[in-house]
Length: 386
Image (cartoon, rainbow, N blue to C red; front, top):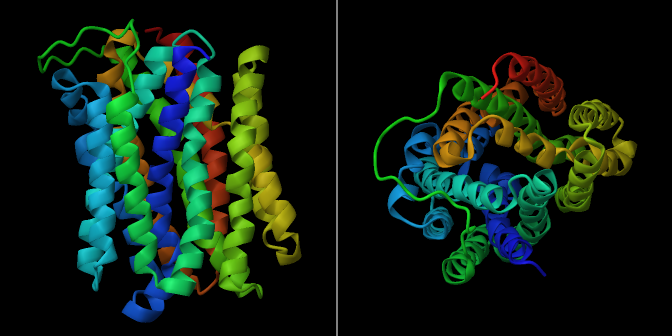
């Protein structure tokens, strides 16, 4: 196996920890609501707090890569995810939970930027959509693990154990990346300066690409956080509802990689994305008929969430290779700014309407907006070459 594919496998398994740690709160939401008296707007806020540090840290985080190796920054991020999860494990109030989630969020932004940069460096110009598809599928893999594992831990041993187990996984991932990861030979030499090297066209394209990614992920997060509640309202037990919704995450682990290959080989990235977004909206509409929950989840994972790698590959056309670390910092700053409020809005809709399906309508709107943002990216890309 070529070195770049071995590195990708290592990064995939380490990055699972991000989704695993993120999903802890969503999987134990019912227990937190019952034991700590939190409402769903508060739970939605705690879910969103995972993304809040990225609004502040994502852009300056690129500068850490000027002094430290990419793998070391990824390792630090995973260590912060472990520390934040440990804080949440001992929390007994909304405020302490918020602190733990913010620490996790700081680790998430550091590791996410440089996970992506390492893969882009290794695969730039060579099966990039496929490689990005593999990398980003580690997120739903971790989420699927959390939906099943964390829910089971909460029911059988208490909700705190969900945070403990996820934190141990992140710690192990940090050690593996720091010891075994390598950077691509073509990686540009670091320049220790604060110079902003992105030109106007790169900034515009990067911001629009981030909008596509943000809306897409916001729809997914709202689905993960509130679709189980919709099924419970329709008669499912909590663990069963989590299991049904997790089907989408398990399926997309495979479909995301295949989607990247189809897009790379056909060259029809936009057509693939639009078909998938239409399918995502259809699948969520099917969720309103509770007996169709299983086929809805299957369809959502098989096609609806498949184009993650296709969307991430937009970054390659938005910035020059030598500006990739800074560009990814800007990309994720915009991503966190747009995505972070989504769970809070969904939770507010649920509290305001007392309708478990109101957040699902919100998710449908987010996937429609994803397709529109991609169309805007292509239009601007033709007029503003980098």
